[in-house]
Image 1: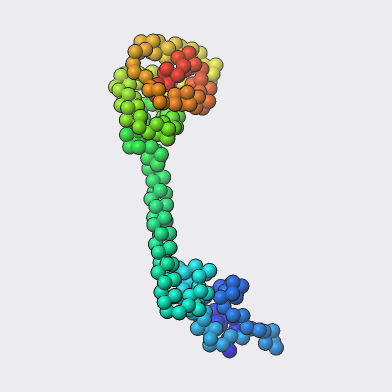
Image 2: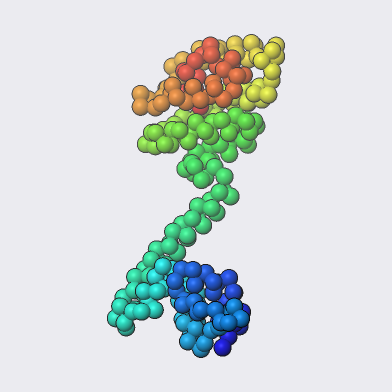
Length: 241
């Protein structure tokens, strides 16, 4: 006869695992002897080894009792079903790992490559990271709501970045995000934005399907400085984003 510790050692499991199998009804729990100890025979070792083998194979504990008492055909059918279930879980875990690995790619988790390249181009042109991140959020909204318009918008923004005057102004705006609202340079920069917009009034703007109001609202709520700078030119300038 074996103590619970000896039983666990024979099967290569912990005493805690044996007690858990007792609790869920997988392994019969013998009565205590006169000394207050539970004594296990050879049959308990066999039963515990069968439970451990199935558990190690990935069979859910809720299905082990069924398999322990199944005939050959029922056993084979249940194993096939469990195998399919495990394969599905493996596919899901693989997808999760791929998504986790994409986290290291930063913006690519949320945005298509053409937008990511655009944001990288802005960084290379000296646009401050704060404005790049804010624009990234705007692009995320656009991708979610009007994905069909993204190529057109990317082309328009790249065309704007081909304009040295726009790049200079955009870069200045990005660095102004850190200025206090009382900074005396803000009114002058706001005038430059208005003047640029006036000179480019005939440039193609956003199409009617684009949620410009939502975009512009997000921009203004995100930065009091931008709210002061862009208010004079309104959502029309947001079309250049």
